Image (cartoon, rainbow, N blue to C red; front, side, top):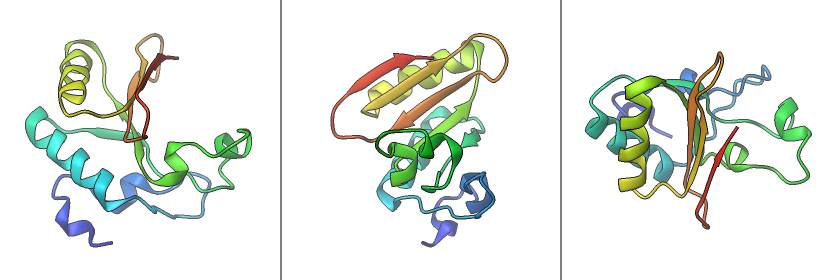
Length: 121
Protein backbone atom coordinates (compact mmCIF):
# COMPACT_ATOMS: atom_id res chain seq x y z
CA UNK A 1 0.00 0.00 0.00
CA UNK A 2 1.24 3.48 -0.82
CA UNK A 3 1.12 5.25 2.54
CA UNK A 4 2.08 8.60 0.97
CA UNK A 5 -1.52 8.90 -0.26
CA UNK A 6 -2.65 9.44 3.34
CA UNK A 7 -0.88 12.71 4.05
CA UNK A 8 -1.88 12.90 7.73
CA UNK A 9 -0.92 9.34 8.68
CA UNK A 10 2.18 7.15 8.69
CA UNK A 11 2.39 3.36 8.44
CA UNK A 12 4.14 3.06 11.80
CA UNK A 13 1.10 4.59 13.54
CA UNK A 14 -0.91 1.54 12.45
CA UNK A 15 1.71 -1.16 13.12
CA UNK A 16 0.50 -4.12 15.17
CA UNK A 17 1.75 -3.74 18.72
CA UNK A 18 2.52 -7.46 19.15
CA UNK A 19 5.92 -6.80 17.61
CA UNK A 20 5.34 -8.20 14.12
CA UNK A 21 5.26 -4.71 12.59
CA UNK A 22 2.43 -5.49 10.19
CA UNK A 23 0.07 -2.69 9.22
CA UNK A 24 -2.28 -4.45 6.80
CA UNK A 25 -4.83 -1.66 6.65
CA UNK A 26 -7.43 -1.61 3.88
CA UNK A 27 -7.05 1.31 1.47
CA UNK A 28 -10.82 1.95 1.54
CA UNK A 29 -10.74 2.38 5.33
CA UNK A 30 -7.66 4.58 5.19
CA UNK A 31 -9.26 6.77 2.53
CA UNK A 32 -12.29 7.32 4.73
CA UNK A 33 -10.13 7.98 7.78
CA UNK A 34 -8.06 10.51 5.81
CA UNK A 35 -11.24 12.25 4.63
CA UNK A 36 -12.48 12.38 8.23
CA UNK A 37 -9.14 13.83 9.33
CA UNK A 38 -9.43 16.61 6.76
CA UNK A 39 -12.90 17.59 8.00
CA UNK A 40 -11.86 17.25 11.67
CA UNK A 41 -8.95 19.61 11.04
CA UNK A 42 -6.82 18.42 13.95
CA UNK A 43 -4.20 15.70 14.44
CA UNK A 44 -5.51 12.22 15.22
CA UNK A 45 -3.41 10.11 17.57
CA UNK A 46 -3.79 6.46 16.58
CA UNK A 47 -3.64 4.35 19.73
CA UNK A 48 -4.45 1.06 17.99
CA UNK A 49 -4.47 0.28 14.28
CA UNK A 50 -3.87 -3.10 12.72
CA UNK A 51 -3.86 -6.21 14.94
CA UNK A 52 -2.49 -9.44 13.50
CA UNK A 53 -3.99 -12.83 14.52
CA UNK A 54 -1.20 -13.21 17.11
CA UNK A 55 -2.04 -9.95 18.90
CA UNK A 56 -3.18 -10.83 22.45
CA UNK A 57 -6.52 -9.01 22.09
CA UNK A 58 -7.34 -10.83 18.85
CA UNK A 59 -6.22 -14.22 20.20
CA UNK A 60 -8.68 -13.83 23.07
CA UNK A 61 -11.65 -13.39 20.71
CA UNK A 62 -13.81 -16.17 19.29
CA UNK A 63 -13.58 -14.52 15.86
CA UNK A 64 -11.18 -11.80 14.70
CA UNK A 65 -12.38 -8.22 14.97
CA UNK A 66 -12.32 -5.21 12.68
CA UNK A 67 -8.75 -4.29 13.66
CA UNK A 68 -7.50 -7.63 12.28
CA UNK A 69 -9.36 -6.95 9.03
CA UNK A 70 -7.57 -3.62 8.63
CA UNK A 71 -10.83 -1.66 8.83
CA UNK A 72 -10.55 -0.12 12.31
CA UNK A 73 -8.56 2.35 14.34
CA UNK A 74 -8.71 3.71 17.87
CA UNK A 75 -8.11 7.44 18.12
CA UNK A 76 -6.87 8.95 21.36
CA UNK A 77 -9.17 11.88 22.04
CA UNK A 78 -11.18 13.34 24.93
CA UNK A 79 -13.48 16.17 25.97
CA UNK A 80 -14.87 18.55 23.35
CA UNK A 81 -12.57 17.06 20.69
CA UNK A 82 -14.09 13.62 21.31
CA UNK A 83 -17.58 15.01 20.88
CA UNK A 84 -16.60 16.72 17.62
CA UNK A 85 -14.89 13.60 16.28
CA UNK A 86 -17.90 11.47 17.22
CA UNK A 87 -20.29 13.83 15.42
CA UNK A 88 -18.12 13.92 12.30
CA UNK A 89 -17.67 10.11 12.29
CA UNK A 90 -21.43 9.63 12.42
CA UNK A 91 -21.87 12.10 9.55
CA UNK A 92 -19.19 10.20 7.58
CA UNK A 93 -21.12 6.92 8.08
CA UNK A 94 -18.51 4.99 10.03
CA UNK A 95 -20.48 1.84 10.92
CA UNK A 96 -18.72 0.79 14.12
CA UNK A 97 -18.16 3.35 16.86
CA UNK A 98 -16.87 2.53 20.32
CA UNK A 99 -16.50 5.21 22.97
CA UNK A 100 -14.08 5.10 25.91
CA UNK A 101 -14.27 8.42 27.73
CA UNK A 102 -13.59 7.59 31.36
CA UNK A 103 -10.35 7.17 33.26
CA UNK A 104 -7.00 7.03 31.50
CA UNK A 105 -6.62 6.01 27.88
CA UNK A 106 -9.64 7.80 26.45
CA UNK A 107 -10.32 7.03 22.79
CA UNK A 108 -12.91 6.57 20.09
CA UNK A 109 -12.89 3.37 18.01
CA UNK A 110 -13.96 3.75 14.38
CA UNK A 111 -14.51 1.00 11.83
CA UNK A 112 -16.26 0.29 8.56
CA UNK A 113 -17.99 -3.01 9.37
CA UNK A 114 -21.08 -4.03 7.41
CA UNK A 115 -23.69 -3.72 10.17
CA UNK A 116 -23.95 -0.57 12.27
CA UNK A 117 -23.03 -0.77 15.95
CA UNK A 118 -22.24 1.70 18.70
CA UNK A 119 -20.99 0.84 22.18
CA UNK A 120 -19.12 2.12 25.20
CA UNK A 121 -16.23 0.44 26.99
